[in-house]
Length: 78
Image 1: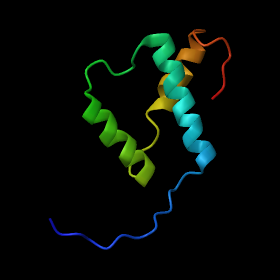
Image 2 (image 1 turned 180 degrees about the horizontal axis):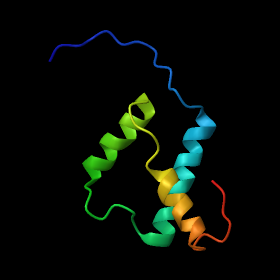
Image 3 (image 1 turned 180 degrees about the vertical axis):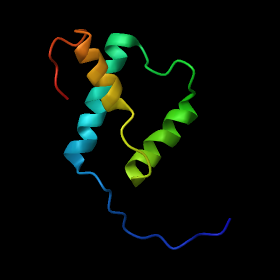
Image 4 (image 1 turned 90 degrees about the vertical axis):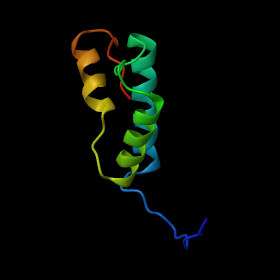
């Protein structure tokens, strides 16, 4: 296996923003079990890496906001 040179990576999100994403995902799991029952672990892994790379927007925000609108999170904030 060939080893590529490694470089420092700067994420397009702050540590705090990434921690909010984790909190939103945890709240969804506690409330719904999962927002993506047809997705595999690998699908989630790919989505997470694409989010951190800035290739995709948050998939948690929309689901989290929907749960708040439905009154299922009792005014929680990420």
